[in-house]
Image (cartoon, rainbow, N blue to C red; front, side, top):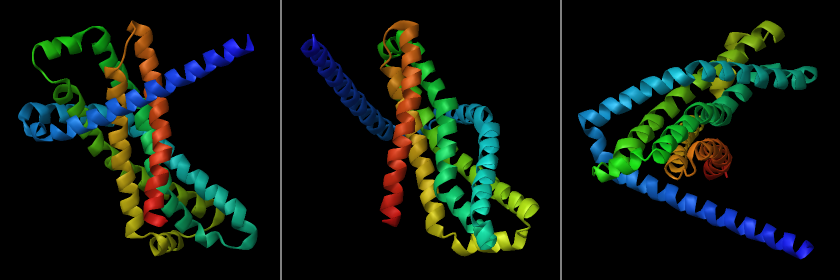
Length: 264
């Protein structure tokens, strides 16, 4: 019996690794196909689809991104000020909040929110189309699912990711400045000067690059899970959940390597 359980465990692990490898390969192939289809994004129909998606996605996530960013900035500033209050280094709070929000927390928190609100909806929408054979119908009519479904969502999130990240960074820094001023008497001028002194152009570029990479990750993972959906309504739920989990893991891994590449 113990040997049989061990064998089943090894088989389950092997099946999981094979499925993960197949899903990763399919996602990379989908990204390459979407990249090859980029010239078709200039058509009026595709532009209209992209603008509609941008409008829908923006209203679906803007309020949540702003609220989370505000409290992220408040938490960063508060924890730093509590730590250094006894050392008399409160004036350094500006650089900590600015660099953290621009380089790391802004892109990451924005990506997490977009994945939870938009990435899962992409997986559910395309997954439903898969199980109801709508995608098969598109292929029969010689309509490419990559051009029709994947490309508009990829471009929309490539634009939306940096845009939301900029909002997130600004709101987070303002939140940190507010709590520093009202609770610890750190002047606005001191906070601003300290933030500008340490914040470099490379920090801004790193944050924006992460937002672009994370946006592409959300779109490709959501579309991959949706297109690979099997098993009816249960399969749609499973694909939706998996899209969020896989996206979160990729945010951490890709974010680490981007930071390492710029600041090693």
